Each structure stands twice: as structure tokens, then as C-alpha cells.
Image (cartoon, rainbow, N blue to C red; front, side, top):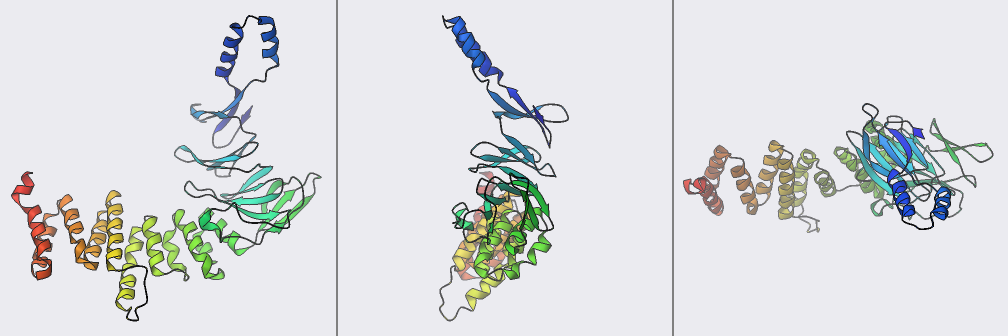
Length: 372
């Protein structure tokens, strides 16, 4: 059996399993009985993807799925099994995203959001290689707890809808309405025009400008989860739009998700908060802690060959706390920035408290160190 999509899918008999069965039957003295048993024995069926161009196998043989579901862009692929389903990303390569313990009755993509039904509920899933989670949108039960959400998304929930009892087939989405069909071929409409669901779907599809317009509708207690959802998908620069997040939280989100330039842009606000904190209010950071994070930003930028941002990060760390000058000096030395080291040395020599760092630079500039 064959199926189309981004790749050619083929259900096939596992030849290696058949060979093993034949070998075992030949070693058995009761050959007549074994032949009868082998004929009645169910043959193992496996599944294999092939490329359309050269008919080359993609990956290895895997357990045969019940269904194969592709999105319209051929980017995401869902393989369903009796008690679970798996999602794969078909981009430069074909890679595994995740396995989810749900028995799917039916499923369909709308954009890059995967809607699927189970015997009791309907979910929306927002696939991503680092972060995918199902969100319940409809249930035939009168009570429900969001135990299926990841821990840092437990505050994200929608006012789920009541859906008909029984197996439902996902038909599709038309004008913010999810259409499903029951076993008697009756159609039912479920509105998905909820701000949270709309926001998540827009971000998942990359419609960021439209998604940002929804942010003022959400209570500030949701902002961290929403900002994390955006940042994981590469849109962390928009965390500044969340008024419910502190500057320190925004800074950490940007640095965590490699939005390094955005993180450095927030440093003046953090410094301003420290210098104006005359009331003695406890802040979650100090100058040394902020400098330490800047060093980490510098390391990430250097690893990404973003030398301008790396230099800026190390300079920020040294300006925040003189104890971090060695990090800046070692970075400049590792990059062979002799002129910048000389200039920094001259600047440090004018301050008695910083002359030790000037001597450290002299060590790097010495002929003895160069020979070593």
C-alpha cells in the first residue's frame, strides 16, 4: 500500500522477519505442522519513506502506522498508531519531533496547527522541534483538568467547548470554525474564535504582526508563557510587547533563546533600575549577576561567529563590574585584537583600582606569552 505527501510512504512485508520464520521452520522436525502454522501466522508489516526524486529510502523501516497525515506545505507529518502518534518535520532532513500518548480517531492540519480528536475530546497541537504540546479545545465530559499540558504552560487554557459523544472526524476549519462529523454523518461546528487559541495559531503560522495585536487582551499572568511560546519559535524579540514581564525576565528570555542583540538592548534599563533603587527594594539581580549573564551572551555570540555582538557583550560585562575585565581581555587576546588590547591597557592604567588588569594585558602582549 502506498501514500503520498512530502515523501512517498510504503507499507511492506518485513523481509527479515519472513526469513527468520523460514529458518526456524526448517530447523523443526515437524515440518508439516510448521508449514500450516506459518501460513496462518500473520506477516509483519513495516513502513518506509522514500524520496520522490531518486526513490532513495529516507530513514529506516518503522512500525506500520494506521494513518499518515501531512500538512498542506508538506512540512509536518503525523503517523498515528493504536495508542499514540508521532510527528516528524520534513525540511532539509526528515527529523523526529515528538511522540504523544493519544489514541487518535481523526486529525487534520489547519496551517501548521494540528487538530485531532480522541474518543472523548478534541485537541489543538502546535508542533515544534523543541516544544510541542496539546491544548484541549472541546470535550464531551463535563469536567476536565489540564494535566496534559507541559509544566510551564499550565496557566494556558481555553474555555473548552462541549462536543458530541462518540468518535468524531475532523473535517476542517472555515472562518474560525472547526467542523467535525459524527458517526451518523451529522456535521457539528465548534468556534475557535478565542483570543488565546487565535494567538497561538497565528504565532505557529508565523503571522506575528497579527498575533501581537492580541497581547493586550491577555491578563499579565499569562505573559511569561505566551512570551516563551513565541521565543521558542524564533520571535523572542517581541517579548518587549508584554507589559506583564519585568525587564529582567525579558533579558533572560532573549539571552536563553539566542536573541543576543535584543538582550543587550535591555541592559541600560536594567542598570537604570539598579542605580535608582534607593528604596532598598530587593531586586532579582545585581551588577555582578548582570555582568555574568553578559559574559554568557558573549560566549554564545562568539560561538555563532557574531563577533560584534560578542565584543559588545564582554565590554558591557566589564563596565558593569570591574571583576569581569579578565573575560574581556581573554576574549580580545583569543581573537588577536592587539590594538584593542593596547587601547584598553592605556585606559586601565589611568585608574589605580584597575591597574592590575593592565598588568594582565601586559602578560598577553609580552613576547614570552607569544612564544608560548
